[in-house]
Length: 307
Image (cartoon, helix red, strand yellow):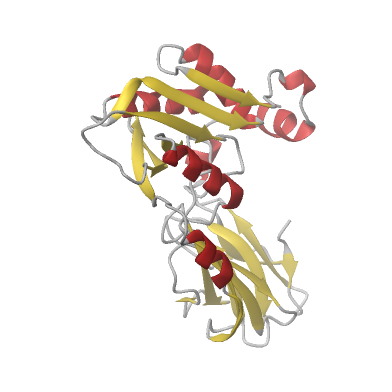
């Protein structure tokens, strides 16, 4: 859905995972193909091209699978430059002609800031800095969301953790694991999480550690990681969630008998599986709108991932 034919009528730009990661390629009708972006990271958004300057604009997970940066690169693959310096989640909406863009930036503990920038990333004006919201949030005892890693066999998984504000490492806390786990969506992201963030802060104030983890099959870690669950949805992901809970059980500040899990839609499917296959690990589960039978689900997941 990102095929772009240039004005010369002979050149096509598209993205492909043919080298194992999602990258931008230039193709011509004589059968030639040139890879423009390269590296062990995924291009996320292909925004477009300024054909007059021969410059392509895109976003990628080059810094980390949990963050997104905005970049420009020449049509020949040269002169690559980051045009968003902040680490976290950067999104761009370009004007026609690719001369300017509205940048939306946030991180896990900072609400979004909206700025108008030129196509070199220079900030022209701040459209909304959410200063009023930040002032309100300053009145609450909010804990910092941290990013951590978990392990499932030889696979390293990205995770996040919110501990109670007055965290005492000598005490043992119950854990609430919030998940999704399905194709096309990551829960662990260095981005402002809005209402969910505030709900998780409430749980932390009540004495819970809030954890999230992205299992195998999720995004921005290359094609092999993403496609590992193809034709076997539910198998590897639930193994990863159970192994994460077992790793949490071994932490000195976790009550091993009070680990719960909650998810919605695909996360409800995962929660239901976790409560059966991981019944010895999970004390509690909340399965919201779970997918319990592929026969009754929509064609996207059922056909695309399970044939």
